[in-house]
Image (cartoon, rainbow, N blue to C red; front, side, top):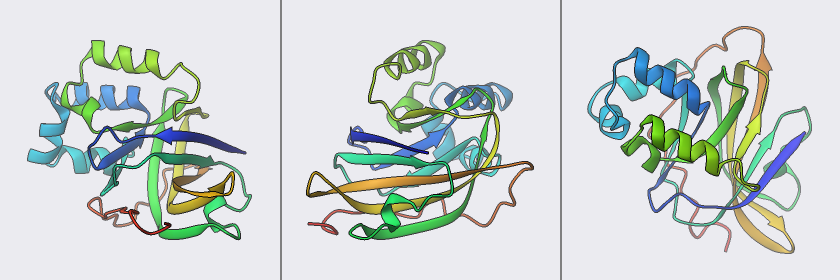
Length: 189
């Protein structure tokens, strides 16, 4: 199964995050972190801990472009590996934990004021069609991140694809470079 979302923007910050956002709220409470998670994540090891525990998957170096976001959940060939697509980045070894039945792609800005109200507002906005959120069974997932360009309506579109496979035990964490830069500007023009 594949889910696709078009015209997804990064809110002018060169970052995307993928995860179960309600699990992130639980992580914030468990770690006694402030409402400014962005500052906490950049001034302590709490961001690295969130990645190691499968709470979030960070994507740095994201250019300010409209993106096509794809989630591939079965054994089919990922769209960015199909003929005609242009793959620039391929990063296996990520893991995510789902405890609230969904994962979403969101931007760094939500972390800057991560309160119950802003989380509620975000969840309400993500109920609108076309938002990059998918329902998943709870559990652990291994995730491979692909980035490049796919052809849609005869035009190359910058894209991120998340190839997700459910595992029945916590996936073995590899050393993941959380600062890896997923820049695409100029690659597919």
